[in-house]
Image 1 (cartoon, rainbow, N blue to C red):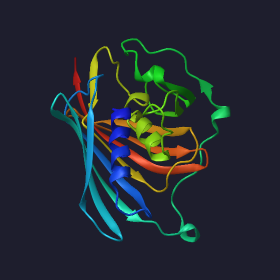
Image 2: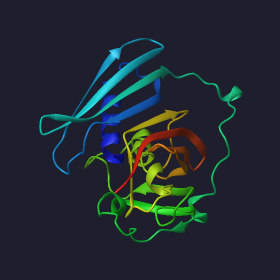
Image 3: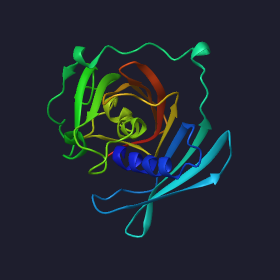
Length: 229
C-alpha cells in the first residue's frame, strides 16, 4: 500500500487551499486490494481554514473505492527555537548493508521497485528493524516526487520490515496507516526504525519512527490483523 498511499497524498497536496500549510497527520484506510491496473484518485477540502484545514481523498479502481485518506494541514510556523523530543538521527545510508533478494513467500513488485539498506534486521529477519529505503522509479512517470510522497511510499513498510511471524504460517495484514509528520523529508532516502507488537487476541500494531538523513521527521503506525493461515 505504499505507492497507493503516496498517490492519495499527491492528490491531497494538489487539493490543499493553503500554500503555506504543512501536513501534520495523514491516515489511509484500506478498503480492499489495490489492483495493478489503472486507478482514479480524487481529493477535496472538507474543512477549509487559515490556520488548519481538513482534507480527504479517495482511490477508486473498477468503479469501487479501495482506499480513502484524511489529512490535517496546518499553517507553517518557525518553531526551530523550541523544537524538542524528536529523537536522534540514524546512522547514514553509507553505514548500512545492502539487502538482496526477496524472502520466501514474498511476491515481486514493490520490493524490487525500492532500494533497501539495513542498519539492523529487515525483511529477511524476524523482529525489530532499522532500514533505509529509496525509490528506484518515480511515483508518477515524468514527475519528481515530493518529500511527503517519498515518505508515504515507504511508511507502510514498517509492518513488513519488523514482522515477528513466519509469513508461511501467519497473516499480519494492516488495515490502515497513520503518519504524523513533524517536517517534510529532504533527499531520496527514507529511514524506518520499526517495531511490531502482537497481542493475544489477533490484533497487533506496527510502529515506526520515520527519518531522512538529517533526523526524525515523523511517526507511523499500522493496526494489524494477525491470524494463522
